Image (cartoon, rainbow, N blue to C red; front, top):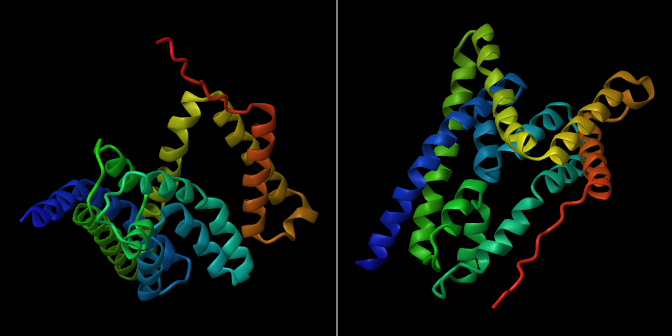
Length: 239
């Protein structure tokens, strides 16, 4: 009975994430279809990845016929943070979680799932984690399917209008961090500046879009890491 209760508790804790994912993945479904992907292709992409930023960045590369190397490097840069999140979460997993469970949890270990699991204040059990990742995965998949289907049915002008939600999502992700941290804001501005160089300078225009994004992101991050590194404050034990 306890295992069932833990599973239900995980589903309940995952429902807010599920509803939030439906709106974002709906926008992704529209974006994917508008870029030339089919409805089933968009759905498969969501079910096989479960990463908003990675998927949004992958679609233009796929639509433009980019190379697998270009696609792989892009995903490596964008999704590198999940390795650190999974490493941190692995320290909080209960003793009943087996190796195959760890692979399954890592597959759906998104920012929101990690935040909920890490905030439990105790080791999380296997059934709880199964429930916690189930509802967000379903929400992300269903939202993508609905968005992709709507992209095929709705008028083009309405699809273009709904597609603005994608840019709003990225602004919502970046703006709060940029407002709190001056180095973050400078890093964003530097990345924008470098991106403009790739767009307007004729020689740089020959570089594929996916690689230009990788170069801009890595270069801006490297420069700011050298110029304005984040200083960790060590706790001093006064006892």
